[in-house]
Image 1: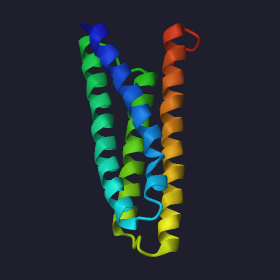
Image 2 (image 1 turned 180 degrees about the vertical axis):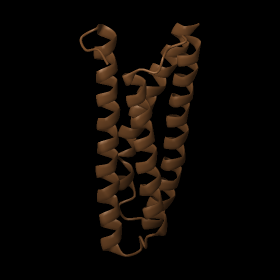
Image 3 (image 1 turned 90 degrees about the vertical axis):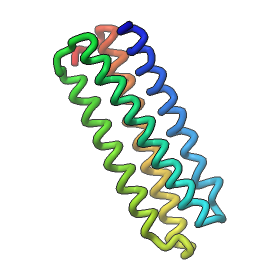
Length: 141
């Protein structure tokens, strides 16, 4: 049963990574439609939060099922989750209250969306690499 939960956690992380990569298309697809950019950002943020929360929930279930103690790797995962949620919420709030009808503002927000998405992808990739290395015994965290 624990293997199934851990596999679910792993699959959700991969789906999330794919979602983040696909999210890089939002600024491109809404390049000439500022209102579409706001709407796409809303949908993206809600989906982001949903998937990230599923990952955290399945991780907590696995931790309690295996009766695992709080280790450094778990603290790192919690910190990465919290940072990513904070960044995403702040990003959406800025997009929501800004005047995207102004071309320069829209361009600035698209650039920020792209940069933040790349940072989030890097956070997930680094966490995955750390956990794989930890599972193989290459590093101990």
